[in-house]
Length: 96
Image 1 (cartoon, one colour):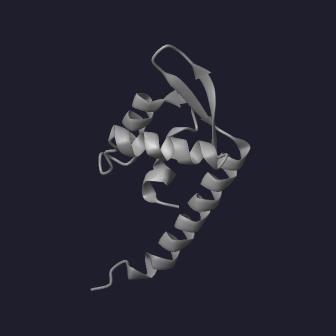
Image 2 (cartoon, helix red, strand yellow):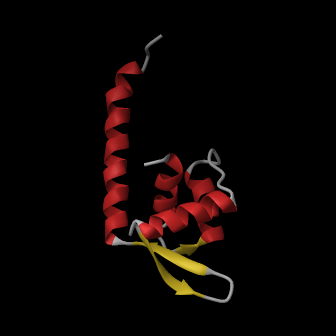
């Protein structure tokens, strides 16, 4: 899973529209990851196609997305994988 997909799924642990997802990604990544509209909407389309997110509401100008159960499982699996990597690399603390 790409970093952008991970953060987008993490942002969608609370349903939201595209602009809200972009803001949450920026906040969750500590400002390190800024996602533009083209990247985000391409990613949302892909995640929807893969069944990771679903459209929950649609207004005149905004579509609201939320994680599906499959999306939650994928996010949790990736979190666990990343956590293992960090724990494995902890041996580098103090390494010169």
